[in-house]
Image (tube, rainbow, N blue to C red):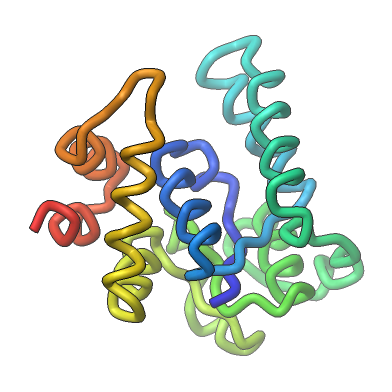
Length: 180
């Protein structure tokens, strides 16, 4: 599945970590845009003034790790799209331009399914996307999560701590599955 990741997912770093680990395992193909990167910088700076540089560094690292993920050339589509929040049109435009199956977002109300369906895209909460990956290949997803937890060293974390962190990120179903 090719999935366009909205800025509000990037700011939930634990969620992003799982999605990018799933990408490393070949379970999804992530996409994002420079507009999303700019939103991430603003969001980081709003929460912790002066942290835009940290967001820039994170996005630059993501761009280096996933060079195919950065979507360009979607600007011509933006004006023709209708969404409840005009500021989200660039997300749908980039998702369509890059052939994404889904927009992954915590703000489902801003991406009505009927509107997205006309463009062959659906809006998915990160929890729903993760559960679809579990349904597709639970063995690979569990191995991905074990490797993710094993890779954490600053500070190290246990699977129980990972589950608790993901639950705080509103990944209830995925957390339940992971804890089982």
